[in-house]
Image 1 (cartoon, rainbow, N blue to C red):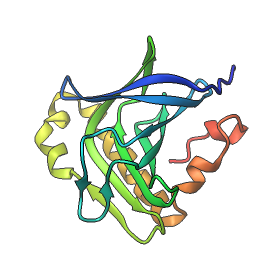
Image 2: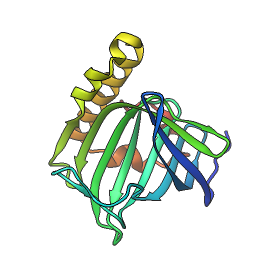
Image 3: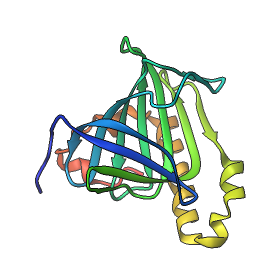
Image 4: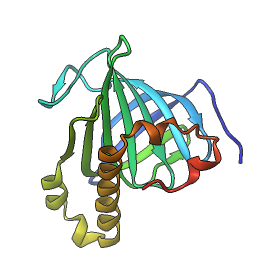
Length: 177
């Protein structure tokens, strides 16, 4: 397996319901063929206040995507480097094509605060309304399984351990969830 660590750029494209939700430039930090890590500034215009966290200009996201897992984990820091927490998107496994990191959002999300004291399941109503369970029951099961697994991991030991294993380490390919 070739491990690629480079300061090259990719476009992260998040698709939802067959349409592009957002696309933004990111710097490729690491790609080992299974896990892809990119870094990007907060890409949406202005501030997004969720009540439990604010994403705002200057925030930096280090985003971890897997080609064999149904989630992405985004470490969120202020521009000064202070950890805010982890925002997890439940997605189909990521693909890279022609400089585009393509990810299909399946509506479920998880927020884990920096100190691990807050773990929130998000958008379960949107997931139900999406109709995925009727259109693609296998994908819906994988999405729920991924959310449940990430929540268990976050509550038991936190997400930092999932991300701390160097991508080239032999344990990095193990299914932790």
